[in-house]
Length: 224
Length: 116
Image (cartoon, rainbow over all chains, first blue to last red; front, side, top):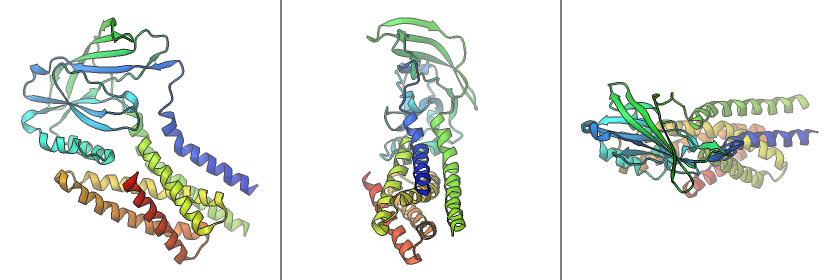
């Protein structure tokens, strides 16, 4: 009986530990994976500013977060698996490109991640709302590629206002099959589930483990 | 996220093997103890490691590796010492043996972190 209980606890613990990472790779029911890209169409209208996409996931496997300088008309193609990037604006005169490049080139992704987070916490950087990254579409949808075109509306000291102008849908052969004008501002902030869950789990896992430890010791003492 | 849980999984597995080498009985209990002990220390070590690293931004990138190594050693030492007590009480061994198990387990996992 005790042996079975221990096996069950081990199974549940392992399931708990690995479920989050396994879930990240599952395709939602009735969905297919699509390729999402976006571009900023009027960067040249703001010559004093540098625009950056962050956090930009460079990988379809384990997350590999970098920050990317956006150039006029360049197509930004994030992996949407672990959330959506924001667009950041910084006055080019205030932008320490050397430090930015040195952080961005750190090989160890965890360290790079932490350094980038700290780097962008400076007041010099003005954040937009998240670009709404689309990773999935209904399985019967005709499109496989989405390209969303944003324009910069306004840069104040607190917010970079970007507006979604057009969404272009493309088929398997990258032929445009549909394009729709967008009238709304970029959708509300979508906090990456990965970052939200990880900070939450870093607190909850030790608490649960501590409870398990005390339980094991108490059960053992009661049996004596 | 995936990276973190992979690291936690590997740590649990490796420390379990070390416990098994030292104790050589009750393998399922040892696995449970490895899960419990590492689920207490690993997330906290990860948090503090991240916290210390976030405070080194002003350091030139060429010096980052030195800071990483210092924090890594400090955190590994704290983890090694803090695992002695749960190992002693969960596995029911003397302090000396718990100390040895904890030292070996953390030495192996710390060394592996440079490879994996």
